[in-house]
Length: 469
Image (cartoon, rainbow, N blue to C red):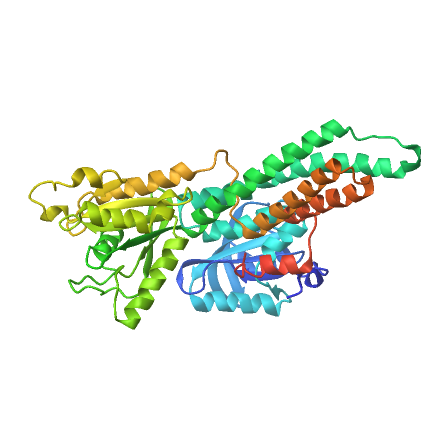
C-alpha cells in the first residue's frame, strides 16, 4: 500500500473489525470518516425514536438495533465520536454487537454496500498521525502497547504513547533549531563578518546534546531486551538437571527429562513473567565432547545462545561438583563472567540428594551461587528473585527508555552528525559546512516524531499494524 498516495484522499470513510476475528461474547466494528454517522444512522434503529444525526451526542452510547433491510441483524450499542475529539481526529462510530461470526461479517458487508471502504492495516492510527492527534513515535507505541506481554513492556509503551519520548526529542530539536537559525542568519550576512550564534553557548549545547543522545542510545539495549523478553541461557554438563530446572521455573513439563546424557540436543525456549518482567528461558544441549554429530550441532547452538543471553545460569550437580571442575568452568566462561552486560549465576542443583554440606562448599560460594532442588522445586523462588534483581540492576535511571530499533538508528545518526559539528568547530571549518551537519542532526531527530518522513517509513510502520487499528 502506498500510504502517502492512499491518504491523499482522506475523504474516504473506512471500516474494520476492531476485535480479534472469530466468535466471542462481543465484537466491535468501527468506522472513521465524514460518512460515519450518516451511514450508521441509516442502519441503526435506536430505542429512543427521538435520536437523529442532529440530536446524537458525542462520546455517549446508545442502545438499539442494526437493521439488515427490514430484518433485525442484532441488538447493539452505538457510540459516536465527533471530530476532532476522536482517536483519528475524524467523525467516528463504534458499534458493539454480539460476537457471532455471521453478525460481524454481515455488518461489514452492509457497510461496504453503503460505500464505506474496508480499512488497510494500521489505517486508523495512520489517520490519527496525519490529523495531528499523535506523532510518529506515539503511533509506533500503539503497536508496542498492543504487543506488550509484561508489565514493564506495557509501561514503556504507555510512557511513549503519552508523549514522554516525543517531548524529549522535541526539546532537543528545538534547542538545536534555535542555533541553526542563528547560523543561517550569519550565512545571510557573511560579507559583514558578524556572529549571531554565541560560540561558547553553541559548544555547551553540543556537549549537552551529546550527553542526552548518548543516554538515550545506551537505554536501547535494556529497552529492547525488556520488549522482547530477557534471554536466560540454562547451561551445564549433561544430566545435571537443566531440563528439570526449566520445567520447575515454568511450572510445566516443557522439556524432556531423562537420566540418559545428551537427551536435549537442541535448545528449547519458553517465556514466563516474573514480577512484571518477561524472561525468555533457553534450555540448551549439555556441554561435553561427543561423537554424535547431531548432539555436537546442539552444543554449537548452546554457545550461540550463550552469546545472545543477558543472564547465564550454569547448572552443576552438587553431588559431583568439585573445586577443580568449577575452576574449569571459570576458565571456560571467564569472558562472560567479567562481561558487564551479562550476569553469570551458578545454580547448585540436587541439594535433596545430599546428607550434609559438601567439603568444597566454600569454594563454590566464591561464585554467585543459588542452591536448589529442581526436582522438588526447592528454592526456585530464590532463583526467580535473583533473576528479577539482576534486571533491576540494569534499569536505566529516568523514565525514557528506547526500545525501537528505528529510533535507535535515528538517534545514532543524530549523534554522529553532532560529533561532526563538534569536530568542525575544533578544525575551524567554514560555517556553511558546519550548518550542513547541523541540518543533518535536525533531520534525523525529525524522523523519529514524523516531522520528517517518507512514504517508505510510513509503509514500514503502519503496514505492521493489525487491521482495525
